[in-house]
Length: 148
Image (cartoon, rainbow, N blue to C red; front, side, top):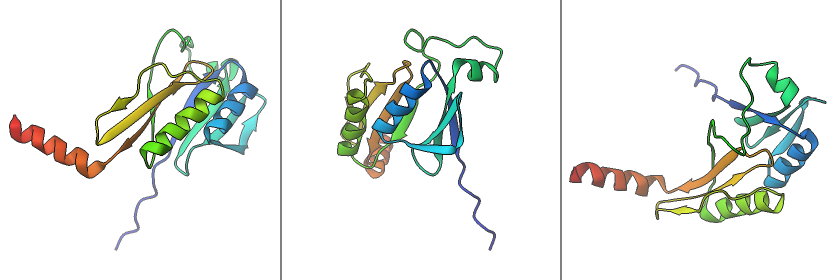
């Protein structure tokens, strides 16, 4: 039998205006600092063993792309989404973000089988936090297909 492939990891690179403030914010939300990948212009934080973010000063971020860094308070380039294990965990994560200075730009979404809230970090990057009952979501999806 062949070995199972290693799980893929994601590294989200985020430009930040104040690295120290961004680190404190994400630690308050629940991310863990990884000092193996850190210096005065970058800090790796981890949400799980496979989900990581690199917080990069604008100067450091600019070294990776010739494109202009958008103001995330005014424009959106991506919406990032983290899953949680329950509705309560969704609320706890977003509440920690709000307590650390984040904002909640959109109202919560409650579809019964799926629940989500969101927060914008200190630089305006929007993170969706969601929980989903996969079995109920699949049943709802199959019901929609049967009705079509």
